Length: 78
Image (cartoon, rainbow, N blue to C red; front, side):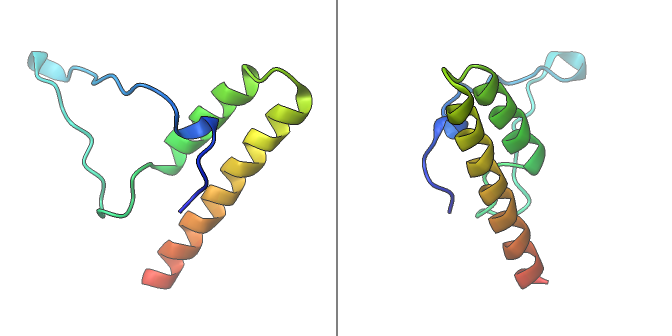
């Protein structure tokens, strides 16, 4: 899996669906914890709040590694 970085540190707030019910995110597979879009959004948010340019690049690089690992795992499972 991906190393622990600022990407995975956040609070998940459920979004209400139509009719006032709250829908829970259920991954397609148990080993898939975050979608690529969630990884990208969290990385961009963390990079924007990083104290320096180098820290922002480190966060974005870690996100790219996570996305590459995720795509390799999906290709290997097909």
